[in-house]
Length: 299
Image (cartoon, rainbow, N blue to C red):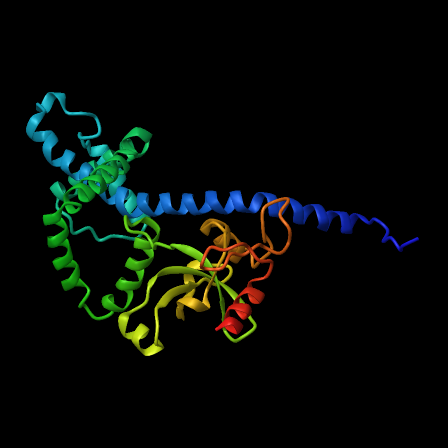
């Protein structure tokens, strides 16, 4: 009989805690990232828009509304001013250099801000305005003329010291995730990299530069080598066409293979060793290495 380890509370706790963490962590992290993205847009885009809307309403209200019909938050009484002075004194912000009119305007702004914050639909006005503005920006800058103008402005901004060192990389990441022309991977291949006998999963992006093909003495492919666990932080190598071995694997499965460091090596029910097909599309062979070596021997 094999040795069996006795069950202990701590052993079971670690086991089930780790299992629960593995189940819940992806969902929790996804929700956290979405929440952080929402808060970033709200605090940095929607909140300034809300402030601008409130300032506009404060300026327009006395000009379009009769004095006897002004809302309660617009009226500033002597009691409101006294409470405002008291709050300044409590916060050690005296002496007060503001004029009575300036203090009334500040008290009115604070009262309106409280009213605005107590109504969620008003607080969401900035977010709605931000969504509309982003949509209009995409509509205006998406056409030919808008794209030309924005490219010129972008080129001028990208020449600013400090900005030009960061902006191109941020733009590449954003274009990769949200751009209309996402990185196009045509197929999944195996290449012998970083040395002979080690096989690495790569994603073909396109034919390489003509100068590289000329130096290599034949057609060359640009192959993106993704790295674990973030597959879009890999690097690009140039491989002669006859030195790559095609894999009959979907691109999303290959990326999942890289992200999990090979743990998810295939779908349920598939054998551990994936079947590979040589570039000519002939009958499948069992091992990519054997296929490539056999091709070289025939040459």
